[in-house]
Length: 138
Image (tube, rainbow, N blue to C red):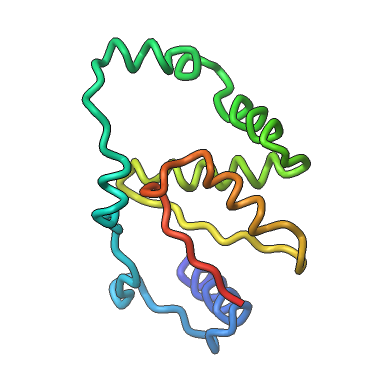
């Protein structure tokens, strides 16, 4: 098995232009840390305490829905974006991972002027500003 993993790592490194080297886990250094919201973002997201009963009253129908992502996709389409359900669901899940011990990062790739940034921004509109940290590159 180690030969397979070594060969796989070499192919992945070559594919992403790392000259055939991928650091072993013990060599890897963190490149980012969990971001704390800026003070102004915290001020925006501070809400008065709400009881569990009130929260359940507000979100119980969604929480008990057997297909929560499909509900999101429906609302996403109603926001004016069509044909991007799969991408939108993946972005939604990646942002939701902020609540877990291991975060998920995502890079949306596609042809130039294909609507990637627009799709991402429309999904981000479903979350408070403190829920994400966006990076773009050219």
